[in-house]
Length: 261
Image 1 (spheres, rainbow, N blue to C red):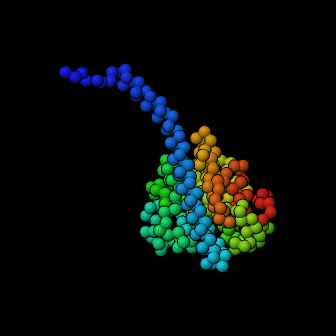
Image 2: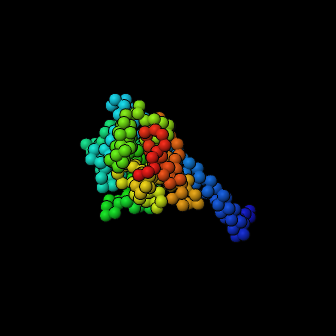
Image 3: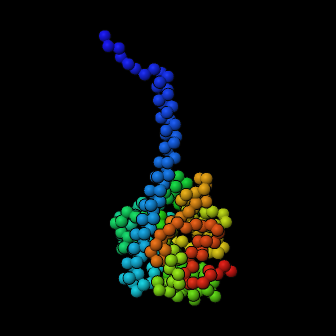
């Protein structure tokens, strides 16, 4: 009778130990690859946002849309960025000035942002009970319409108002058009998280700033980077640090961004 060969208990334990070691080696590498793939998707999304802005400018005498109604016609109040019931593909009548160029495209949410928003929640959604289901994760530079919500001091306001047209932006390679925000405020960097798909940074660092959740240092989500598409159409990583950097890359009027306000 042929003897049946089988693993001994010790051999099985050795095999399991080897598999565990291999998994321990491979998992961090796989996680890095996954993060890189998600980041590539996010950059591609923003590149498409840049294309949409390009088409809008060409169709509208090179004038930027207003940063408070580019996405939602009524300003996207009430944290609509995570309100599935107000999804614009399903409710096109709510769409703002740029929506016609973005509709029916799966380019509105970075996978990394979606994951973090669902796990961290919305620190700027006080009293809002809408489930966190990200629909739109990118925000427009509030200065590009020449307005920034009337926050610019009177002595600088004339310079900003002139930048409502593309050809008035002095350094389009260093002025972002769309970027990402966190869902929470960061002391010393910002006083608010994403709430209306409008990114308005000021020298006081008490309003908005770039996101910090890509490639965070030591897992600290306040230390990483964001992705952005610039007025000239290129995409790159941007940093909210040093404090005030978001504002510097927002300023379209040329010269050194004034810090005395």
